[in-house]
Every structure is written in structure tokens, then in C-alpha cells.
Length: 405
Image 1 (tube, rainbow, N blue to C red):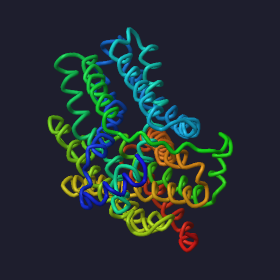
Image 2: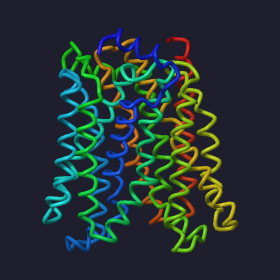
Image 3: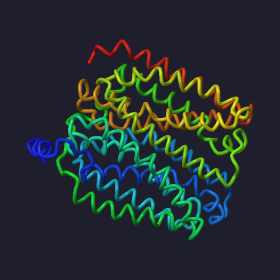
Image 4: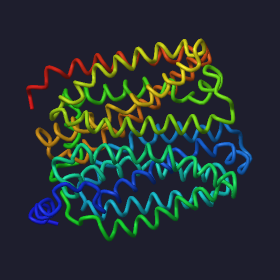
């Protein structure tokens, strides 16, 4: 697809965002999210099926995040030198093989290898999806496209994970991965049919792409996302115990509570796309600073949730709505800075949000575990607030770069 073709499409449907290629890329992020998150919902079933402890299966979640983070920028830098479409389809095939291996894993070590295989390609797949923005939609829909690709993960947590859990309860946990594999296979066929074949391979060396990390704007953007994600995942890791023990949600309504929280997170991702329209480069993320401050206040108030359960429930919804507001703005920063100053590192730049957010998940979860063991659930919010304030401070440090577009 050449530039003239893109222009013709834009002229013929100036106000249409949800084209088939866009919907396919959103569906791909949904599959990535469902595969990543579904382990949390079927953890007890896997433990019983493989005759291991739940803690052992729970380690799959943290190991996935730790492996995901470094593989994402490395994979994106390596694949940037190859034709985009062929690389995309190859990595989607690897993702499919990983899920098939999960479905047939005879023991825990094989399941672990399968999860690491999926983690190795998932972040790079998200990064490649982001590079389609200029080819499948118009400039005015760019931030909306970014927000919807990220929202595929939120939709997976709202719809995919409960569906996968129900299938595991009804037919066994292996059938959850059979479903993911089947849907991925169908999606792969549709992607081959509808996605554009044009490529933008880089002409710089592998190591040269990493000069991007010496850019102060990129450094601050990465740090900001790490702090922002850590602020949320300090408490989010223990969301179910907080709802049950601090707010007093009855056990039979916990699933409903998780769905409500998931809907709030979905709204957060989509509204984050609107926030990302407030300028170019570093400007949208720098303007997220007041949101971090509001998040810090809400996290501090979470310590008193047990005093007023009704208000505590509303507070959790508010925290869900704040959770992903930075995502599209940070992606705009990475992509715009790369396009302006490091054009050979565009694929690498597209991977930075996934990398940074997963580092934040790992940090927040680890800190949350220590705080919960030492001080209890009530202290998770205030500790998360510290990370939110650090994110606000980092966003403040971006403000001097707003004029340097």
C-alpha cells in the first residue's frame, strides 16, 4: 500500500475509524491480553491439574512480566530490520504455538516454557501493531488508534478472562487455551487477508537504535510510566483481598466487582486517547501531572476504606478510571520523539510503553507483597501514593521540553 492509496482511503471515508484492519489489530491485542491475564482466573485449576501448588502457578505471572519487559525492546529492535508484515505474521504464529503448547503441557516445566515463549513475542507484537497507525487510519485518529489497541487488553480483562475462567470451570483449564488457540488461528487468517503489506525497515544498525535511550525525554517518559504503573499495581495485585476484607464485598459478588473495575479500566484507556490529543511530543504526558496528584489522594484515602465500605467501593472505581490515563500520552511521546530525532528507532520506540509498564507492574507487585506482609492491606494505598507522587514529579521534569518539539 503506497502513500497514494492511503490518501485515497482517507478521502473516501474521512470520518470512519473502525475499518477492518483497525478492528483486526484491536482483536489481536485482545488475544494477547486474554492469553496474558487468563492465568490469574484459572490458577487453581492449573495447580490441581498439574499437581503443583497455587504459589508455583502464581509465579507464572511474575515470571511472565519479568521476561516480557527485556524481550520487548530487544525483539522490536531486531525485527525492525525485516519486512513488517512477514515479521508480524511470524510472531503471531509463535504466539499461537505457545498457546497450543500451554493447552497440551504435560507438566509445569513445559507450561513455564510455553508462557516464556508467549512473553518473548507479546510485547513486540504490540509494538508492531502501533506502527500500522499511519497505514490503517488517518492522522486525526492516531491517538484514538493507540488508545483502542491498548484497550484490547482492558476488554480482555473484562470479557476474555471471565469467559476463560468459566470454560475452565466447566470443561477444564486446557480448554481455555484451546479456545485462545482457535481464536488466534482464525484471527491469523484474517490478518493475512486485510493487513497492508508495505514495510518501513530501518537502515541503522541494531545497537544504533538504542541511542534512543540517551534522549532525556525518552528517559523521563520511561521513568514516568514505571512510577505510574507501580502506583496502581501496588494495590491492584491485591484487589480481590481489598474488596473482600477492607470493603466487605461478599464472596459471591467478587467476580461482579472485578468486572465493574475492569469496565472502569476500559474507560481509562479510551479517555486516555482523548488526553493524548492535547499536543504533540512530551506535552500530553507532561499534562498528566494533575491526574497523578488526584491518584495519590485517592490512594491515601484507600487506607480508610474499611471505615466507609460504600465510599471505598466508589474509590476503587475511581482508581480504575485513573489507572491507564497515561498510556496513550506516553506512547505519543515515544513515537513523536523517535520520529523527530531518532527515525531509525521507531519500532523500538513503539515498544517502550509495554516495556515500561511491565517493569512498573513487577515493581509495584513486589513492593505490594512486602507491604502487605509487613503492614497489611490498609497500607497498600499510601505506599502506592508515593509512586504516584514520583510520577507527578517526573511529569513536571518533562515540562521544559514542551517547546522543543
